[in-house]
Amino acid sequence: MNKQNSGNTKPAKFINTNLKQRTLILLKPDAVKRGITGEIIDRFEQTGLKIVGAKLIKADRGVAQKHYKKDAAWHKKVGEYNLKDCEDLDVDPMEIFGTTDPTEIGSQVNEWLFSMFDEGPVFAFVFEGPNAVKKVRTLVGSTYPDAAPPGTIRGDYGLDSAVMSMQKKRALLNLIHASGTVEEAQEEISIWFSSEELLDYRRADEDVYHY
Ligand code: ATP
Ligand code: MG
Picture 1 (tube, rainbow, N blue to C red):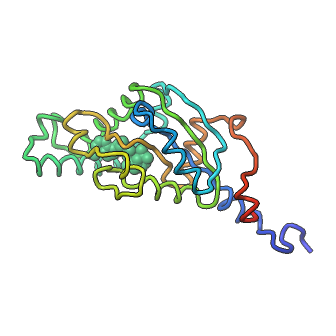
Picture 2 (tube, rainbow, N blue to C red; picture 1 turned 180 degrees about the horizontal axis):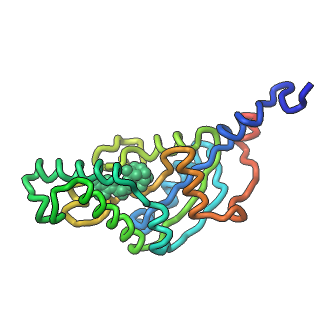
């Protein structure tokens, strides 16, 4: 009998893709400057997910560009959000962006994102555990804090909106970045952490749940 698949032991593939899933969390400069990083990290730790990497880092432009290399589809989506806000507020997008092309507007917002990292250090974390990517995204809440429900971190600690960010010509301040997919997580973790910086140990929860 194949020892790996005997008894209660799960096949290795299941363990790798699920129970040991990793995700990148960045507490953005607005969270660090507001002094609420401890409270936010508490929320993730309380779920049972395990910190396997952590560091405070002042990201340079190269890292920022690798991390937020958004494509034309994202530029268009974000540009359309901002155009809609302009319409609702009766603001001329030409005054703010100098264009009405959504893709061009989104590419300007992408530049604001790179500048966000000039505002101060980020606290970077890798969390690991069952369905870590989805669990963390659910806890973080909607991109737009004004629309994020109470109970989510962006809903509880944030109030920024596309309207406010557009008027101030800066990225939306939503406290946290969290990887959106497992593939995104793998790519992003390699941007922020070397393999030596990711540490292996057991949390008590792993013994409780037997994984
Ligand atoms: P993140 O990738 O930071 O976790 P997200 O996945 O919720 O956020 P994305 O669509 O990937 O959202 O957007 C990346 C970041 O771009 C957002 O976190 C926010 O800071 C900024 N952003 C998104 N939409 C806008 C907008 N309309 N105006 C200004 N900034 C925006
Ligand atoms: Mg994202």
